[in-house]
Each structure stands twice: as C-alpha cells, then as structure tokens.
Amino acid sequence: MLSSTWNFIKRHKRKFIFTGVFVGGVYLLGKYAQRKIQEMQEREAAEYIAQARRQFHFESNQRTCNMTVLSMLPTLREAIIHHLNSESLTTLLKTKPANKLEIWEDLKIISFTRSIVAVYSTCMLVVLLRVQLNIIGGYLYLDNSVTKNGMTPLAPPDVQQQYLSSIQHLLGEGLMELITVVKKAVQEVFGLVSLKQSLSLQELEQQLTQIRQLVEDDSSKYKGLSWYMMPDEENTLASQACGLTENDVTTIKLLNETRDMLESPDFNIVLHTCLNRGFVRFLDNMAEFFRPPQRDSTPSSTPDQLSHVSLPLAKIIPIINGQIHSICSEIPSHFVQDLLLIDQVKEFAANVYETFSTPQELQK
Image (tube, rainbow, N blue to C red):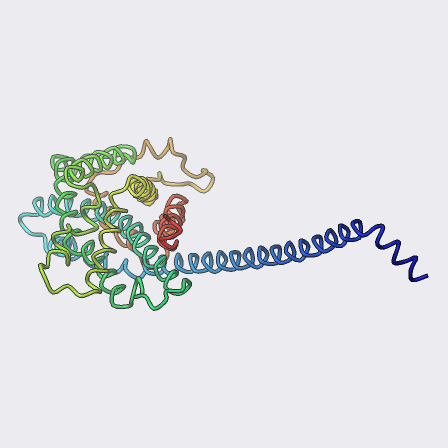
C-alpha cells in the first residue's frame, strides 16, 4: 500500500510540486493583498480623520473671524466718529448761530463722508480679517497636526500677536487716508448741491455711484484699495536695518504673504463684491425713509412708488448721518450679516486656509 502510494507520488511529482507552489503562491498573494487592503483602509481612515479635523478647525476658525469682526466694529465706529465729528455741529446748530448755513454745509459733507467711509472700512475689515485669520489658522493647523521633528513653530504666540496688530493700520493711518479721499469725492459731488434741493432715492444712488467711482479711481493710482489696509513694506519691521529677531523675520514673512493676497485679482473681486452688497444694503436702509405715507388699506410701497418720493437734502442729511450706527454695529445687523454670508467671501476664505494649511512638501 505504501509502495503504491509512493510510486503514485513519484509519477506525479511535478504536478504535486506545481500544485504546492501554486497554492503557496496564492496564499502568500492573498496575505499580501490582505495587508495592502488593510494599509489602504488605515490610510483612508487616517486621511478622512485628518480631513474631518481640518474641516472642523476651518469652521471653528470662521466663527472666530465673525466674532472678531463684530468685536472690532465699535473701535472702528468710534475712530470714524472721532475724525468726522458731526455731533459737535448738530449741537452748535441748536444754539442758532449766525453762520447757520455754513455749519449746515459742513454737516452735509461730514455726514455723507462718514457713512460712506463706514461702508468702505467695514467691508475692508471683514475681508482683511478673513485673510489674516485664515493664514494664521492654516499655520496653526500645521503646527498642531503635522510632526515638526523639533522644528520651530510656524506661528508662535508672539508672532500671532505682532502680525494681527497690523490691523491697526486700517483703524489708524489707513482710515485717515480713506477719509481724505472720500471727503474730497463727496465735496466734488455734493459741494454745490443746495440744501433745499430734493433728491429721490434713485438720484441719491446715482450720487453715491459717482462718489464710488472717484474714490476707487483715485485709489487705483496707488495700489488699489489695499493701500488702506496694509502699510507699505518700508513702513513695516522690514525697514529695520538690524536687530531683527527670529519672530520679527517670521512676522515680516506673514505680512508679505498677506500683502500678496491683498494685491491678488481674487481678493479685489471679493472686496468689490462686498462693497456692492454693502452699498445696496446702505440704500435699503435709506429706502425706509423714502416711503410715501401709508393708509391702512394701501399696500406696501413698490420700487416705482419709491422712485417718485423725494426729500430735501436738508432732511436727508440727518438720516445719512445716523447710518454709521447700523453699519458699524457690534450687534449682528443686516448690514454685517449680509457681508459675512456672501458666498464669494466664504469660498475665498476656504482657498486661503487650504493654501496655508497644506504642508509645503505637498504643495511642491
């Protein structure tokens, strides 16, 4: 029995060897495939977790952007009111001075200037903080999520503070420059308009469009509207010939990256989208005062009806003068909410965050 079995094996030896090799190969291939599938699943799970973590961090960063905008609006409002103090003129008018007409003329220019400056600077604050906080947010994500192997953090706390303090340019020198340009444009458009002249809402919109064209044409002679948001390179830490610390160098790098963003076509498209929405909302607020007297049985005013309602400029001035309190309001108003919810702003913020939260080796 054993000899016959052995003879059978010898006669079919090559088949047994081939079968053994084949079975062994299939087994090893199966184990290899199983290991690769497991590695792929683990890698996909890790990528999914990383993506979810980054998405969560991004969304949290956007909420921080919104809260930061709202927290800074009172400071912006007070700065504008300080430089364009119409309250002192209205108080003076109550004393019935001899130069009443002259004071009204000053009030006309200041009232329009400060509301228009409020629209511009609020839009600039929204988009500038989106850029800055998403650059910082991207670097913080890398610092917290990517193994640095003992390397220096991309955005240490001192650098963050130093970098974000550059927003003071918009609240200081940049704001003063903006006020000068807007005031000049307002003077050119409204300077010769009589206080007794009546204007419809449509005519007021046309006047505002002229002012915008003058402001934005004047700004384009320099570096566009980014001129008001970021100081020149020679006015930053880069102007120091020596004594720069490692943090100073990192801050300069962040400022230069931000400056590049502000001068990009995408940024200008987003900013002008915000400005267009801002001035539409501004006129919507004004429209409330151009509605004809309503009777109980009369339906709400239509746009055609509003176009036939006119108010003397002297009555429009106090309305314009008070708009700054709804434009620069820390309590979420329709004006600010409109800006924060613009799709182009959200998409641009996501692109900035994506750029700065991706490791450089992956970008390459």
